[in-house]
Image (cartoon, rainbow, N blue to C red; front, side, top):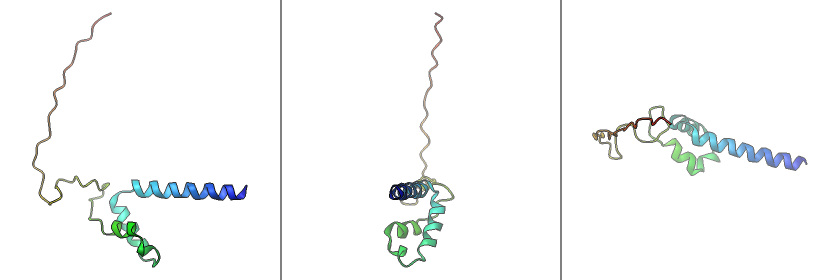
Length: 92
């Protein structure tokens, strides 16, 4: 029974760690990765190496849509407009 509790605790902690890392803003992820890179064993993990080198995301989630494309050129396209048609309600 104790082994079952330990296995469930390991699975839950793994899920919590993964979801926290995935949903964490990119700026926080970079700070955490830089802190974990001080450990010799963790410094070899490619996930941490990539996260530590992330560019500043401006305190957002890092979706890379902060006004410039991949080449660093500002986006100048106007937002697309949609037409909304309201239909009258038919009495019953």
